[in-house]
Length: 309
Image 1: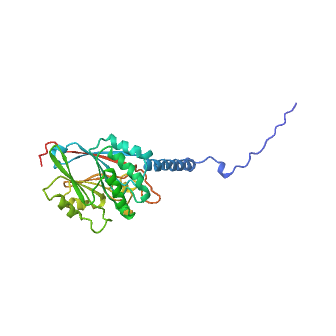
Image 2: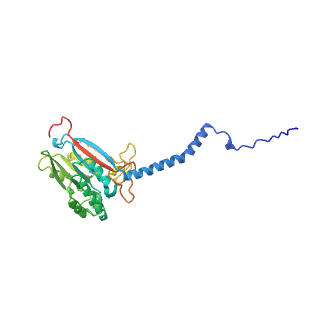
Image 3: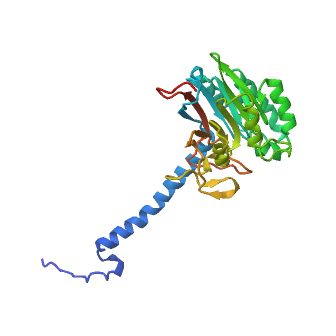
């Protein structure tokens, strides 16, 4: 039996069926991976948007100052700012508990906590929770004045025992020594507010005490330095909202790009400013990115070998 052999011509190849050059293969691989990388980036951003607006972070600093009275060595201050009636756990339980764990001697609040009357019940609950931890001192920010809620807010502070410190100062005593804690009313306040120089002059009438200033505005640092304030606690910047590597935040108040001094401790001469990144975003669509809500804990110390002021 004969075998019949048949032969068929190979099918014509399309230009794309030829073997690809290494360069073209790499290019095609990158094209195929691009959607996966994009999906990964979008997912990471979405996760951080949640974390940066809900997950509290603790910033811990030790601040050594030669003028600090010896009796206040180890004095601890928890600093909260720019709360904007946010909620961290039911009744702000998480915020209060993180504050409690720091075992502070005092708690300072540097403004922008409420803007609407409907937020005052939540503010009252927060104040009561914080007052159960340590004495609390408060100065206003721009939003309290913009919302015209300062008077009813003061009633809440008075009812809960929080010291309203706008345009005022108190002396804190410990071990027979004192420091002065002063509060600067926000510049959005009425025309009767004291200037920084007037406030510091009043606080120094009896001498030159170690002066701790509560002020909402971080961007007045040069004024604090010129008035020889020892330590300033400030907020307002929200950490620059979006914190990118090698920056101090992307957007400051007034849409200032790449603001400075929006977080941590800044020194100039003998003046130190502690800036909180705040606890919330701002505006109708609050946005923070790579910038978790911050509880600041500062321990004041005296440098080794410092002479008594």
